Length: 482
Image (tube, rainbow, N blue to C red):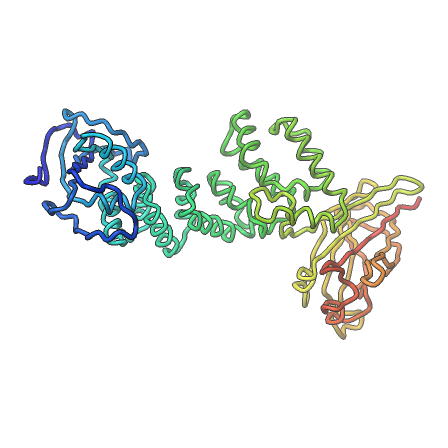
């Protein structure tokens, strides 16, 4: 065999076999720091081992099947490459176990490794890496082939190297989805985690303003929609709209009801943040036949218990799992801010609405911004709160304003008594700021331009009396009087 680098032993083009012929050596196991002479893998090199592989024309692509059978009648071509078993054992756990268990404990001189034809170029590059710590591949597709080979032959250092090179190539939506579609054995490897994390982050940033890309998002595969919905920074109108989007995506990709139920239960339900959905939408979850009844009851009950907690307790619950895969208690950057509502029927129809805003959210309102609350209902009509950075009544300086609006447009008129209050840092109690009475017609709003009676800088400064631990606590009471 040392006299021949290539030997044709068959004519079947459906198979390729990789043969390692290992002569006797005193020590077949090496360590990373062992002083081993690196020998260039050219045909006929006088090294301590020899690599033969046969050509197989298989268009099926790489296979994870590391079978060790060889049928000479199906071998097309044998190609010999001389290698150092010590170097391969030091770099590859696969070869380390092979040389230790397969050779040392038996009289076996030849070892057969079967591969696909499409793996040949990547495997040669991988062998070269184990000698020289460098790769000839530069394109993303070629690097992915080497990554697959490195995973198959357990060369962790090459997997890290490929991951680093792939991260240095400008990411696209197509490449990000390609990385997330790698075999599970690679996705779970620690060496590849930075690459998959970068792919997920790319998709999360690309589709951050999800309402602008709804049609694109609906075409994403499962791995893509998971990456987008995992983001805390997703800018959606509300969690209600994301819930509707998830159902629409599932119906598009899984038209069969039973399959849809399974993917919702196992993959997608953990990405919906039910605690931040409105009670009206949670009621629809209970009646949705696309969820298993037990699952729907569990997520809705959990959401209602969370809503019943105080604000500081809700933040504590969210902080308990900052790095968890399931971040259902973490609030996103909703366009319509969640509210907590208490409804009373007697002696008058009344609701008390609590709205919390972070200092950072308020700071972003300057100079003319607005932030809206989720809708809430009184007497069958939908209302909302809106916080503004606006000019005072005389137009001399910027200040914080709070307004109450009615959603429905049309001829309906509604007389409502309302009162705005804010929690004081000194007493930690709600202090009334403004009272009024207004007859609403659809699409109209009423409120107070300068709720705290101070200019914007005094309102937002670090020692402001309006923020408690960085949170502005607002309350609105609405009453319908006959």
